[in-house]
Image (cartoon, rainbow, N blue to C red):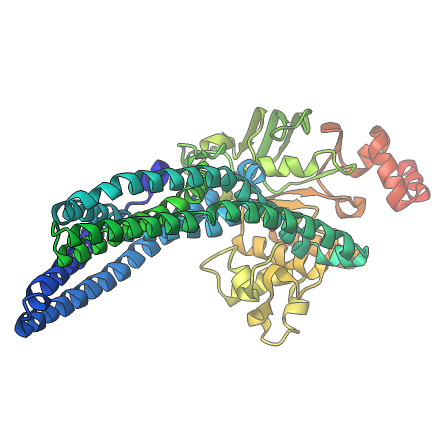
Length: 581
């Protein structure tokens, strides 16, 4: 809880106002039994109708004031807790935005969604009740105990037994409930993860007829969550019966002893009625406080999970140097770079060294899983190299501020994610100040204009979340156009031509060449045809570079590249090229 309240502050003025309203409401409520006792002793016993009328008016006024103050306190507590929850969600979002891919992998998408929504909502509910009842309930209990002792004499002895019994019973229940709180949140995380995977992979699931298996996985996670919730609910459900039993026994004891004292002439009837009211208030206050305490274990577990996010420092941190200090333009250099993902037994990249300069196209090819995409992720610092250095424009990428470094780069990842909105909104991700002229130019270079301009609305046609109303090739071209709008110094294409037909692939690469100017391009590809005219081709195998050169040079010098070329272009074509060397 300390971490959360150190990041998000409550409004002191609103909290002070809330405390004043709750105090006034409690005072008005506490005066009612005293007024009732006066009505009985003075008005009823003394047979004074005027006294009864006056006291009745006073009691009505006190009730209205207590109700009014309580309403104001409720509204104010709702505003405080809602504002707190909104600020806390903003803090979590800002922290998650600063995470590198390593931290995102560690937490997982489903868990971060749960922490930002459900966990924050639980804390908001607890805070709202705490502000309304956490202060008022102890105050009413103490005041009621003092007034009961003053008016009830020996009757207050009953409370000396009832209150410890109630506190012990509630405490034991809370301890048992707290054991389920953390486990319950983990079960919710798992359910969300399974559900999210099912939603994202619904097409694959249907294509392989795995609906029943996925339904079993979801039902398994759902059943585990339900069982854990039931076990927690069974324990927490004991709280109300325990309070009711203590409440009933205490009331019976007070009324029994009070009747004895009244008949013996040791107590007035009004004092007995007032005392019974005070005891009811005391027990009600304890019951309200127990409700707040019951929510504490769950809220504490949620707060710990949120604190884990807020206390996690990004492994990729901003540098202190400005991009204006760089000595080159549009260049990338890897200097003996090795890299391993967190928790991996083996590095995915081993001693990678290469350099590409302004106006050059560098391609990377190799077997699946050899580390090609990992090379690109180190350039915009989605991850940091484990060993060695990556240089952009002659300066180590760790020295750049992240915003300036990424401002130099146009990155097209393997998964071409589009955002809900329209075509223009997605293209504007590449340049916030861009207009329709820039969109059209970028779309033409990416060969995307041919389908954009056919859609109703053109550049203002609707794009569904994730781009699900576009084909795979259309999404790739949209992602490329988004990067082109940015006009970066360095283009990073991570297998970005895989869904394109050969003609579109060729046309797109020609247009990129014509329009890239002094920019440099690094292309990860699976098809030899997509990189055949590159200035430099890096051949990777098992995380290491095993060949470097142009297409024809590699056919002669690199067996792995020749094998890939023969599989894709045909042995006869490769042999003819070798004969022409």
